[in-house]
Length: 258
Ligand code: ADP
Ligand code: MG
Ligand code: MG
Image 1 (cartoon, rainbow, N blue to C red):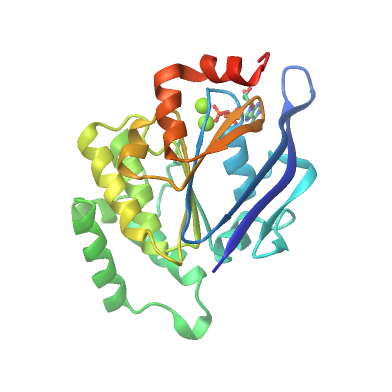
Image 2: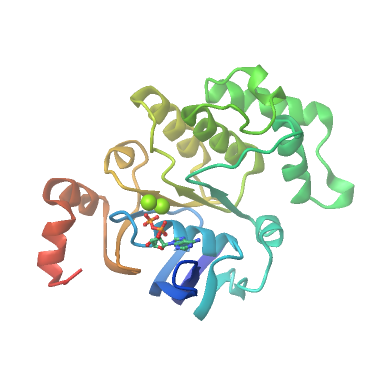
């Protein structure tokens, strides 16, 4: 079993206009282990992407207080690639395009980066695994020979993020608005991919605006984030309640003035 813990996390970014640091996360606490799926919901601009980027180690996000522990070990000073090797994966809200690297090359390198030098995946095993996952995601083989995300449609990019997830098999996957811009068929495919990973060796933090995704990937725990903090935690019914009553209802209930 692996654990991921975020403790009293405060994060700021450089505000280019005002030329000063701006605090975005104001004390986030979150604890999860493999075998669990947690969802984070919350209005736009509350720091959900900031949290995911910070967990993954994106250097623009500065941890000013608190800690992030993977299996009890602090990772805040580790670069992104080291966190990835240790089992973290982030599917980004806006996946980057990488010229000159095909999808297949990227996937093989990413799998091998998590393995020791004497345990690299063979070409045959790689192709077998790739074929299986392409079928599961209803993706064409030609997608893997294209440059990473270059010219991919929004939906293709998201599907491709899930392909990466299935190929890399991280301990923890953070999925940042993986549902945005997806039609219902693509949403079902993406959900099928994530659900196929469910099990004792996999945990996921699913960030979404909408309850819809959580009908397909039913979380164990739902957190609501507002203004840089987790303000409420509950079960899957919390997502439904939010859908019905909106964030305004929760603000009133909690007496929040934000
Ligand atoms: P969410 O994902 O919940 O919509 P974000 O984490 O993207 O929220 O953003 C939270 C706040 O932090 C917003 O006000 C946003 O403008 C600001 N922010 C996020 N990233 C940066 C950045 N790199 N530079 C400046 N401001 C940022
Ligand atoms: Mg946003
Ligand atoms: Mg976001």
